[in-house]
Image (cartoon, rainbow, N blue to C red; front, side, top):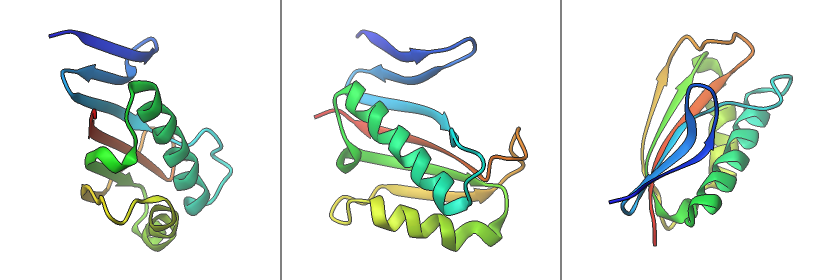
Length: 116
């Protein structure tokens, strides 16, 4: 079975496709000046792009893990999530508070999706 690596960087690939599964690396906001809702929307835009490059979309998400620096941002994060998510195809999801590498990152999101 082949392995395809998307958007490789120095230490990681943005996503890895193996078989019928797409594994996304942790995505963080490109614009760290945004509030939690804005950073979430920015990350979800990146996830859409990675999924499209892999040949799938958010309706085929299986699992999402959200690492949030401050639980006070939970409601703001959920506003962006709720506006973006396909309500008919909800993934399994976990959200945990975590110290992130860069203090300007309010959250980091990783996901696993199926190919059609």
